[in-house]
Each structure stands twice: as C-alpha cells, then as structure tokens.
Length: 487
Image (cartoon, rainbow, N blue to C red; front, side, top):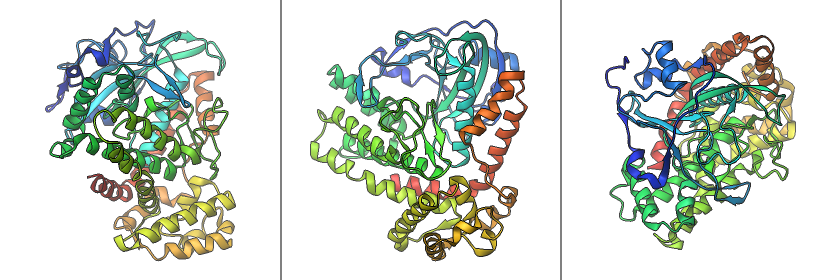
C-alpha cells in the first residue's frame, strides 16, 4: 500500500501488556459504502495516497496498517457513569486499531473505532453505531476543531449495510463504522480499573508510560506522580474552558470519557447552546442535570478527584489536594484567554484579573439578554466596536446597560496581533455566525435519511471549515499561551 515518506506506524500501547486490553477481531459487514474521508488528516498521517479500495480495506474491513498492531486492541477500563461506579466497562463497540505519528509534529496518534463490532466488553450491546450517530460525530468534531477545542478528529465513516434497532430514534435505522484520531485513549477510568483490582504495580507502570510518551517534559521531575496529576488537572481545566467558550455541552462526562490529555472525544448526545443557559442539558436521560452546561466544570473536577483516589498509594493526599485546588484558577485563566481570543482581543499579564472579571460580565450579559450564543461572539469581534455592531442582527440588545458596560470594558484590551488578518476573512463579512444547533443537525440528516442525499452535509462541513480558517490565526496564539501555561 502507498504511504508517504515519513509514515511511522507504532505499537506503543502494546508495550503495556495484556492486563490493559483484549485482542479482538473487527465485525464483517454486509456492504461498505464510504461516506466521509478526512483527507486533511489522512495527509498528516501519511495515508493521503490510499485509493478508495485501500481506504475501505483498512478503515472498513480493518486490515492492519503497516508497522502497527497485527490485531486490534479492545481497551480495558472502568468508570463512574452519572456518578455510579461501573466495573463492567471497556471498549464495547470500538477498539484501538492502530497508532501512527503525526507527520507535522511527530506526536503520537491513536486510531480508534466506533461501531466496529462486539468485544468482551460489549455486555448486552450489539457493538454497532447508527449512521446518524456517525454523522453527528463528524459534525461535532468539525465544529469543535473550528473553534479551537482540543478534540478527536473524525477520519473516516463507512455505511455498513446493516439495519439496527434503537429505542431513541426511528428503527430500523442504518448503521456505520467510524474511525477517529486521538492523541491518547488513556482515561481516568483506565486508572480506576487498576485501583479497583489493587494493581498498584500496574498503576506505576501506567504512570511511567504516560510520562514517557505523552508528558516527556515531566520525566526529570522529582515527584513524577504528582507532576502527572498536576498536568492532568490543567489539561482537563483547559478542556472545560474550551467547552464553555464554545457554548458546548458534551452530555456524558463520565470518568471513562475524560483522558489525561484533556482531549475531548466520544460524542453521543452533545449540543451547542442556542443561548446562555447554565441548566441546558444535552442528554434526554440526564434527568438531574448532572452534566448541564453550567455544571461541566464541576463534573470535570469531580472526575479529577476520582483520578486522585487511584494515585493515593503512590503519593501523598496533601500533594493531590494541592493540585486539585489549582483546577478552578486554571479554568478561569483558560476561559478568559480563550474568550478574548475568540473576540480578537488579548490581555497583558497585568490585566489577567481584569480579563477574568470582564469575561464573567460578558457571560452574565449573555444570560440576561438571551442573545444567541454563537452570534454574540461573532458580533463582538474586535471588542464590539460601534461600526461593527451597527451591522449586526441583534444590535438593540447591545444597548442594554449590562452590555454597554461590558463593551466599554472590552475596549481596554489590545487587539489580537492577528485581528487585522482575521477581520478581513470572508467569514466575518457574513451577517450571521455559522452555528450548529440541534435543528441544523436534524435538517442536515433529513435528506440523507429520505433520499440518501449527502450534498447538504458536505456543503455544511465546508462552511464549518471556512469558519475554522477565519478563527485559526486568533486561536493559534491562545494555543501557544495554553501550552506555556501547562509546562
């Protein structure tokens, strides 16, 4: 098969040993039809020259890629689901198919699947994914990437020719198999499983593995366990802040869905906010609002506390407690940096406290006026200069006392170095923001369900990427500041 120069397959997770996974085989599907191929990321892993037939062989039939796993690995983990511990979890409809290097930065990438068949951890499940679920994951990952959120990337989606029975959508429904790229699938739940079985030696081994391959800057630290936990706290706080600034509700922030790298993944009942509503939930089964938009930081902190419990045999309670206490300050710092970047602004070190206060006032004004969430950040690019606001669809709401004060405060910050470039992008010449509310998701699915017409979806993915191009120069600096903060 053709691979690009520099292509590097890896078997790094294999080194942990079989207490961490089960070797499995992929399901054999009746018929495979390619529905999505992410050529941008195929290029980054050296697989852009694959023919459609070769692509199907590897990402539909799961023939091994060169120099990586001969057989997929269904990962073992436990986790708290909506606060209740479940010792029967694990990869039940997916597996780790391969590990490769990113040709741009040499970072390790996992190729994980969803809907690839039953494993020892499927419990009563069929190991399958609905095609609509695959489409929803494409949309979530594309929009989050456009907004600069650290997220998995959808690499491939095939329709499998199966009909599935589901109780939360009309059945029978079409099936698909998805491949995603993530930087790691080491979860808090991975550690929880080892702690549950009192496998302290394995926890030590996993800590050393994580530092070696994912946190190499920590290798020289005097107390590596504490350093790993502290880094995880900051990464997860960053993820929570990125969710908040994007107006995103993951829906299922169980401990098996939180990784050490704080990279968002596994999109089931997600939603983007229509307006600022702290109580807004994504999952119809989240009856208590445990994972509502405004409670996501609390949920992530709770998950980190569960991670801390697994490390107690290896370090002191005081050290873990001190690291946990950094979560909220880190979250606030990342949120102010990210929000200002989306507005084309930047704060000096001396303005850090003022930035946090102004960003809090902005979200309060959004809540009071119930202005559309994505539209507000679009309107306020450049700090809400009067000439720009006059053109926008909700100009009258910016005349309220709360917004007047916020806009006045925004003028105290400097324009982002990339603002002049960003504001000229065609995206910011539009009258309205490109958003992704549930009504849009359903509208994009309808022609696929009715007529097998993928035109609207493909055009909207292009529109999301157009938005991402506009924000990229603004968010690049925020990403650098974030990495500096983490190290």
